[in-house]
Length: 68
Image (cartoon, rainbow, N blue to C red; front, side, top):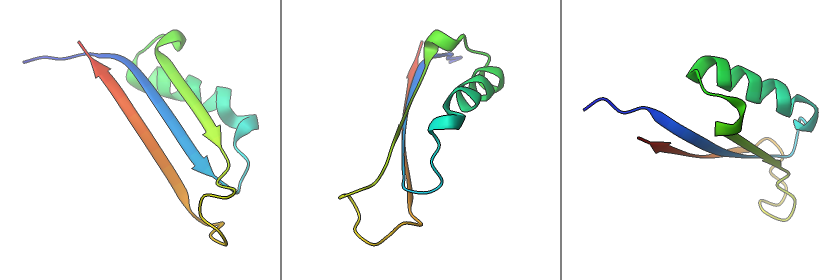
């Protein structure tokens, strides 16, 4: 079965470095890589404050893809 990515939703949880300024660049690169229009790629960037105390080197990525 051949499936195509319909859309993707990604949440990055990271304390440092702050990625907010790179968000659009990351989306643009994902769109090019996956050959998707920008309205099919959703990226949320959050800090890990109060999530994992004293662990500032941790990165959590949650990604979901819808296939058609």
